Image (cartoon, rainbow over all chains, first blue to last red; front, side, top):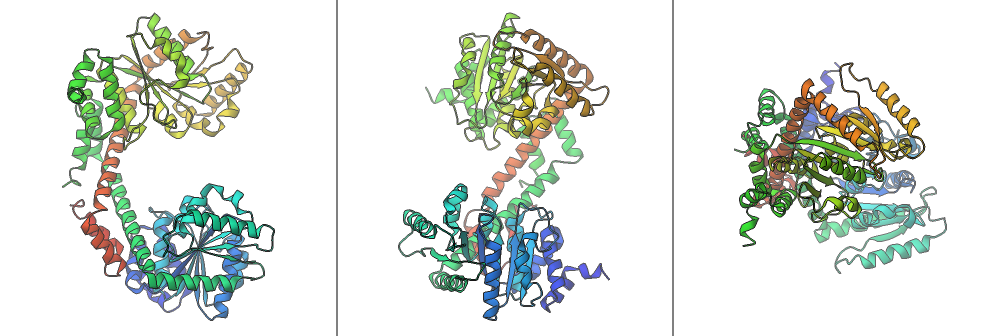
Length: 320
Length: 320
């Protein structure tokens, strides 16, 4: 019984009928990568395309989880359903459980209109940069119209993952300048919306001026979207409905201007590139092993075959 | 004229007849990688195999350059010729000039029995892990019997490069424990000889005890070489001839025990693996570009082709 239900196709059918445990198991298959994950991907692919992703990122402590939770509350008040992927590349694997510091999100844990999942990679060779779009595609295929992708931290991976959403929200705090110096440029590049969260603290206006100034310097084309700056106090919910209005405004702009299509095309190309690179890595692993490999290595060591000719020989079946 | 002399074969002939400028230019070709570098490799390969490499590594400031310079002096007093590759992955490209902080080595700059070269990578795709063995092989082919490979720093790359010598010397100072905490394990793994340099300072005995203790804990097989600990004051030359005697002792052990053969075999296999991986990376770059790539990316975006089937299609010529 337990084994039969691990079959991706059976799980997918169950998930389509609203079985949340089946959805969770499909996401685990994606995390693990390999052939079963790929089967999930192929099942989800033709059914996807209707969902819209909103990325949320910012330095640890900026209040992303609280803001995500408040946003979920707002969407539910509008009777919208929502799925949340909480991604933390640096955290140890969490087994798909809600992360410890996401306690506030548990307010929504029993609401059938909300699906929350934290993601890690349990061996997926492509890491989160491949597992995340696959997970998004699955939730999309299962009918989630809004998918929030929250990443913890402002490292390169986090920024990259968050920046691949349809609309990306960057969360900062008053006085952010000092805390995220390291990757300001990366954040500027991906932001469609800036949220100054914890706006009940000192320094909101300075931070706004700082952001506006950086936007002035960033040399946007005159018909491009200029990132909007919103202030929130996620704890009390203040500013959250305004934030959502700006997200909707950006969505409208992205859909009408061709930006959304362009972004999705770029994402497809990036994903494809990753898949190709992975397959070749896998191929390299296969080539550099076995009897023939040992033999060739011996010939190189004994000065009978130079390493470039040896590589030619090992790569011959691939170089056809 | 200038163009004709850039021909690797002509340069190689000139270098074989002792033309040092030609040797320097061949090393530049290796640094740059690509086809000319590969030609140099193929020319050098059949003539190499007689040289013996000694790796020197340790934390910045441990006195490696001074020790290298003192060792050169010692070898010259024995009427031995020597080549030195000074490798610094973190420094900007130096154009093949002697690094600024290697002033002491300039004592030997006009000695025809000494060849000193600092190495960086000027675009070699495999980086220093591929360029270094190629450079060593060239110097070997040109008749250098002793090749010192000095790496600056104790990062992973430095340790890896130094650890691929026939005999590896790790330079520490009294009280080293605090300064190289980060990669102690890596250094323990590659050391055949430990030098406590600046042994005129306090703490030599504590450092020796610390090293001995780590060696006791490292669980060496009972017939393995136990790294010897030598003390030097490179500034004055104290201990340098003892260091060299230990290097010779290790060489004898390595040659008679089969260790040298085993190491060289491992190195061949690692180099071959790197070359294969590089070629596949190059192949991935070729695949992920061009009209067909744009077309396939479009199909994926427009939901007409899933990304895995798209990857299959792009990889078909390679998967034969």
